[in-house]
Image 1 (cartoon, rainbow, N blue to C red):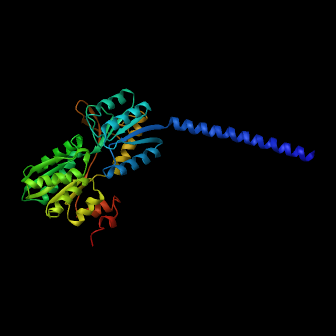
Image 2 (image 1 turned 60 degrees about the vertical axis):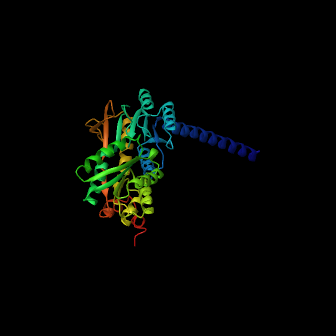
Image 3 (image 1 turned 30 degrees about the vertical axis):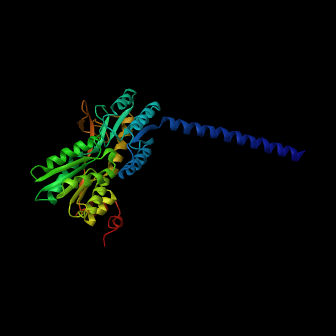
Length: 352
């Protein structure tokens, strides 16, 4: 009987502990759910991850936003504008606090961006401007300055002038227009003439290979090629190599991809424009959180104040820009290696 009573007592005590444990578990689950429900939610829609830098932008943005207490839902449209519209509509249905958009087409996204704003969601145009959407923020690099740096690099490398090609990115990307404005101004009075130009839809690098070959069929004696980014430049260099012109023709581009940095130290690319994407992504994440919290990012008391504006066609919207840097073989180590953007052994992999 004594043993039985002890056994029953142990059962009662164990049951009490289990009940207490269950109660505590419910409390913890409830608090976790409450924290999740109260956290700031950011939707992020990417054009695609075809361009090397976008994965770096994504990782830095997400980690920074999470460190500030926000949850980020990342979507990839794979270059399909209808898919991107669908993703933004999904974010609207989910009642996101902020939607960050790397636009495929800066005009076709206008309608869905406006609908998101009407739903009370903050809209950030990341790197690429959406026209006439009255977004809450446009954050990017100074894209006209990017074109200026390209033009200046061509002028410096080709002081006697000559004929050049211009291989642009997607025509629906507003940045392409801004880069071209900077390039055109920088080439004034240089003696360099654009005798052939082409656009690469959705930034497909293979189209640059075809474009350069097409241009060379009518203009063999060129001295330079401007490419919209380093992916396009890689294909342009490939086409030049097949014509035994690589290293003889100056090639400029942007993004400071690893392949571009390798081409520069090897002598087949003249220059690339380094854009500190980690700085851009960190600041975009901070501003996204502040906008989601209802803070005034343009006010004097803002932690990361946005002082400038840009016109999206109809509206002057807050604009935060970051300065790009021209990179050549001369400053490769100080700009790219010392900053940790690429490792020295990777950049100089093919150079003894």
